[in-house]
Length: 301
Image (cartoon, rainbow, N blue to C red; front, side):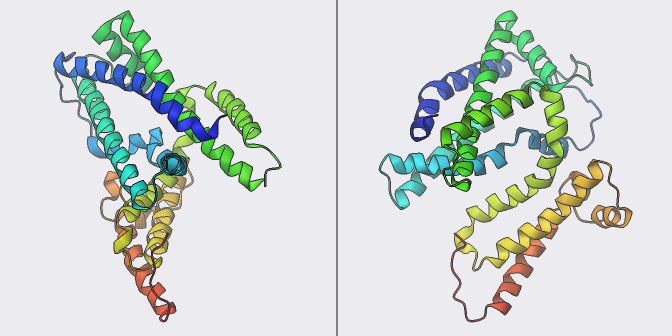
């Protein structure tokens, strides 16, 4: 409800507790492995893990929450290049933290490959791994960690959506009322359970995640991009490919399009959008330049 201080409160109270618990779990799992990895016969484990990470929504959520983070940094009195420097520093710290936590969980999970059945649900797998490491105490620690992880993400997303809808409605519905509506809807959706939520959300993530990844990459190299056409071409072709792949995944089959996508480089690994993104970027730059010959090239944002 307190939009101006939401980042402060998350950073001061919730995130530190979450990080400590996660590092404790990961540290124990790394230094005292629960087992030895075995050959499971899994095909294309890297691409499977990469695509499974879509379920977290981290990249899309990060883009949505970015305005809140930037506003919080500016609220501390930073200006101009200082805002960029602080944002970059925070991003690097978060990136290292995510690498340690996710890398550690991957390591622990590999050690459990010969212990747990192949078809075990993801939530049950995490629960059983932590219980193996710490016993009943581990279950309590995991419950607290998951609650805090979900809470911090949800607070950020709720604040962003409420702020957007408040402006969209031109203050006819207050920011706090939007927060209340979003929280009630979130609670209702949350009651469906993790597996069903993933089933419903996965097609959306499959369609949007490649676009988000391309957008982030282009944003990192923004100062080297001469005109907006590169953005437009890359995003357009990426979305077209990811859209049709998503339609295929939910049972809407268009044979000639599926065949065309299947011959694209890296399509077998889930990256059919990669080459079209590069092609769209180059073509977009050229087309924009041809149709705007006298317009001075300026940064996209």
